[in-house]
Image (cartoon, rainbow, N blue to C red; front, side, top):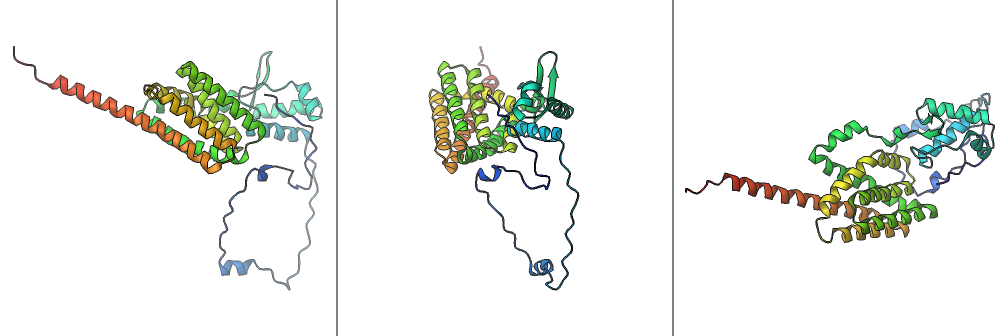
Length: 310
């Protein structure tokens, strides 16, 4: 994917907000908190009071390298620059941004010092892979050895992915929707091959694309932080669920319904479709667990039965 690095002007030295589409993504709910009369009275201005003179502080122009640093950091934060992705060469970045190479070099050094970029011998500069691991691998590996963790992860996914689906339906751009359709078609192709490993990878990529389309950096990086664990969890889930004869058809129908709701902008329906999909997975896993419990109970009974006298 090509990342757009448009030329930019320095931000207003007066500290005025830069143009942003953040507040255009979706209407936000505002909580109106009642103010007590006593407090409200304290806030009222005395009409007879003297208006203080306005204080004019010296205006400081930000350094160009700092502005470039902030722009690159923003691209990483919003997910346009992904963990493991190679940064364009210094000369190319300077041309795209319309700035000098020393300014770009200084910005890259700042981001490297913050642990966001890493250089490879003879291979350029990359977004650090550590950004994938929002939750430390040792912790996840430890948790994954406990059976209840899988249901906990499903509950967590339900909360995060349902919200992602809701906002994706409201905020997705034509580019986002094209990517969602592409990820869904890849998922269909993998399910047709009946290979659980590739199915799990494509399944996780589809749900990550929904998080990207939600345009909420906290949701995106939270879900991206557990991406590898998500893949492993889906592999385990499919290993149990696909024993059911119609499981693949059910799962694909659920993903299709979720995709359609997002593409058509039906936010509440998208949230519901995501929830129903994960409820189906959870109920399937619980049924498998119950079946295993019954089998073990029967085995224990058989082993405990006294042998008939010869």
